[in-house]
Amino acid sequence: MKNYIDLIDQTIEFPTLEFNIDENNELMFNNVPLMDIIKQYGTPLKITYLPKIGEHIENAKRMFKNAIKKYNYKGNYTYCYCTKSSHFRFVVEEVLSHNVHLETSSSYDIPIIRKLYDEGKISKSTYILCNGYKLPLYTQYISELINEGFNCIPILDNLKEIDFYDKSVTAETVNLGIRIATDEEPDFAFYTSRLGLRYSDVMDLYKNKIQNSSKYKLKMLHFFINTGIKDSAYYWSELSRFIYKYCEMKKICPDLDSIDLGGGLPIQTSLQFNYDYQAMIDEIVESISWICNKNNVPVPNIFTEFGSYTVGESGAVLYEIIDQKLQNDKELWYMIDGSFITQLPDSWGMNQKYIMLPVNNWGSPYQKVNLGGLTCDSMDFYNTEAHSSDLYLPIFEEGQERQYVGFFHTGAYQESLGGYGGIQHCLIPAPKHVLVDRLEDGTITTQLFASAQESYGMLNILGYGSTEKAEAQATVLSQEEVKHAENLSLIEQ
Image 1: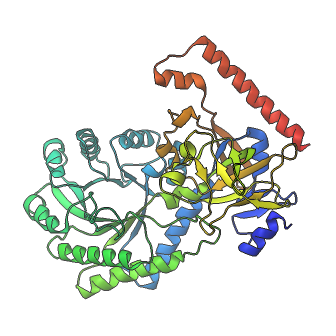
Image 2: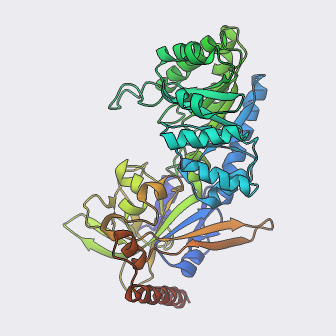
Image 3: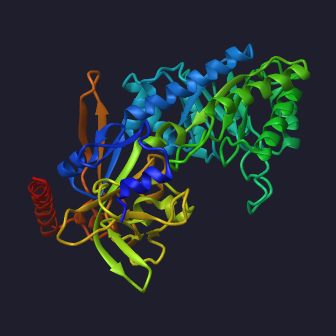
């Protein structure tokens, strides 16, 4: 029987820039030896490889710079990070170290903005684009930022939102954006997005409440495609429709000079992923330029708000295969020491596929398997790849070397969708979370960001209160974790 490495070699081009194996047939992720991290911290384990965030930011900046130069585009490009993809401090601070700007979606983002400003991570000139349907607290916080001189642009999501700023903004000038509701994809449940203003309402809002105001300036139109930037007839049709609207508005609104292209670039979800980023960006810039030139209006400055593209490929989740179960003649289950429902909610909620690879034993024979999680829910499974209807992993036998498996490019949304550190299905705890960085000399560093969730924390959330017995149990569990790591080390030796 062929080994797992033979299967990979005949299926895809391997190694890649991001994945390869070492002399021990163990997986390297961005040249980080994953087994070393597992030996130190155990599983289940979430990791974030911080350098990947900056790599993607700089790639996007470079590609837009190339396109602007290629088509002699007269507008500027601004990279914004949409915080909803991952609010973690280590993510946002890494993002900001690359001189980018921020997009928010709720009132709870604003205290984070305040904290970043107090610590000197952002300045008042940093763009803060405020999206979403806004409750009163959100508009109040936005108004306070504007009154204090922050470069904050509320993106109007409905006809009444501007009325809040009439009452609460004391600044002489308020720069506004308007989100325009796009049509959804043909297979979506609804025809038009619930977010933003209808195309037919944009002109009326401007003429009735902005055009003759001494306070308001319409600076930006916001375009959002839920499925992201894809080379499809649907995407190009909606983008063209939007740019024609920009041209129509620009002719009567001299302050309008920018567009915000929401819906980000895709991330790699398969080792057979094929997407020409530069070609897509070139075509976007060329299309905007062509339509604006045809309508004799200046091209707009381009803002993007990339979330998944910024942080998605920095994340990974590592599990141990703890058991195998043959449930009938052909369905073999590998049981992991975690849960897909609680720790990778997109994998079952949206049938999202990630890059899945074994961490070790690449030199062993393989077999077709299904992966099962620890909850009692029948949906807690993972059984296909993005490029294949089957899932294959090295043969697992009790008493032999432990088997570990990794899911990669999981860095966006999973923690917030899964309720990080809260109460999840079957009280499956949040796993440890480790940050991986690389010094200038290439040295790899790791840092424990969060320990595995413990029972006494759940007791508090559920209203049982913290007890001495529960805290003592937590201490014992922590000691067991240390013992587990020591045992792993002895096994490897």
